[in-house]
Picture 1 (spheres, rainbow, N blue to C red):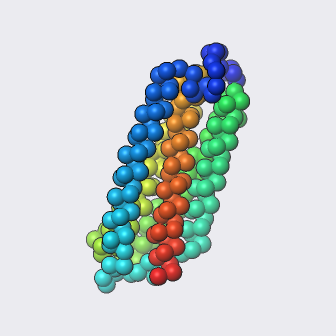
Picture 2 (cartoon, rainbow, N blue to C red):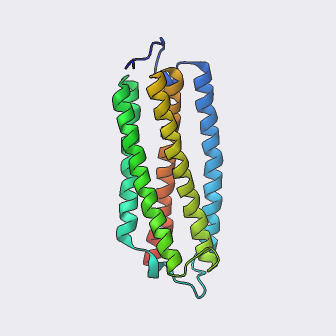
Length: 203
């Protein structure tokens, strides 16, 4: 496996071809649509906030320790994802793959805790059908979790391609784009932590 790409280029490898530049631009446009999606989900959640009816309240179920661990796992994964892109730009494929694996393992840890959290809430009587609040909560947080799941599988496919093809403008573009996607999910989680969990615990 070559550690350096064989294509001549000026600037970052992921921008080496016009196709890559257009794909990256297209992904930024896609992220704009994702922002619109999550903005709608946040708005819906905030409208339904506090409407728990006879179901448990967020103060009853939210645990600061668990949410902080989830946050630490996801924010750390954003850092390791940034290190992966740094190693990519240095042409170090093995280090790039290592940091991508660490990133997806941290993401998997986050997902495991989130699924465990959902199972606990359902066991305590908080479900999609329990109240408006819990409907908004599960749709918003669950949509984010589904995106994290997609990101993990996406990274796995990119790692497979890196091991087979090495570092080229195409694989570099894919690493860069999945990095943008992962950082976006971390930003969304910060809003979820603040507006959903933190606000829910202090109300």
